Length: 354
Image 1: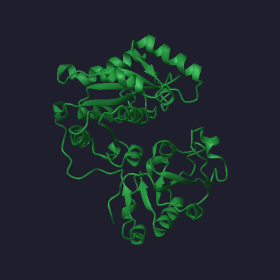
Image 2: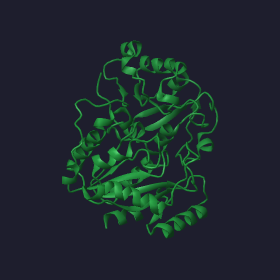
Image 3: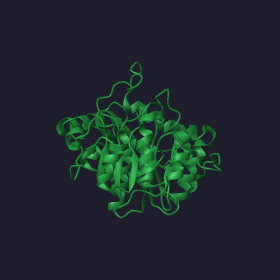
Image 4: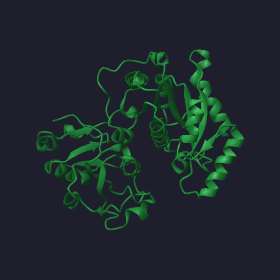
């Protein structure tokens, strides 16, 4: 079995998305692949939405209409090379009903990108079906021989930009990808560092932080930053969780492992309370900025890292309402604020570089 790689230009990808278009399960991985993958996505598999228009269902600016089919068997007619699991059901475990699709994909010669906690390489039938040159990438697992964090990333000369949020699932990965895209377009040696399975599928490397034991969480992030920081002018580290979310343990090790030079705060427009905890109000963004900066500095134990800008996720807002909300946040915090998906990240990038 060869080693997995990122989806690349010329590859033909199918996305397993059962229930992830209608919103019954978390389908952000597949939707992000549709927007950012370098591969040619030729078909989406979703029994609930088969035969319908993907453009109309997702409102994504797709360059072409991509067919939605009900099963892997139907998807094979479109000659994919890789099957990417684009949904995360409850608990991140593989539903029994999906196993036949994955086994059929392996038998048909497809490589598989797997972001679930269920490890397909441990399934004897799937392993037996793999041929030479075929791979299954179980990315949600701890890399071997991880160190503990040491704070070594502070010795790097590159800019280290970490994305922090007011909640989970507010668009930290998307914002980081947009900044990386803008930086590369400007001629910088830029690297997006993935810390979750979706970013790993897009970039081809990184680490799934939620598969790492907490003792080694900052160490694994430090390892990634040290690996890429030497050869790049700027690294954009995908954020996870939030310091104000009681279920999140990810942000602190990301801060310590990255030793950031800059922070970007990501916020969902109109959000007043945490999505999963409606009894917890989002504090004024000026206070959230101060909290993240204080934690990053560690009372002076570490170098200060300021929030350079606020990346606004205004999905579902009109252009005018998005602009109005960005201006309101900028006035309240004294920081530049933009929806980088709508307007691109070039303007906020100049703030980071200055």
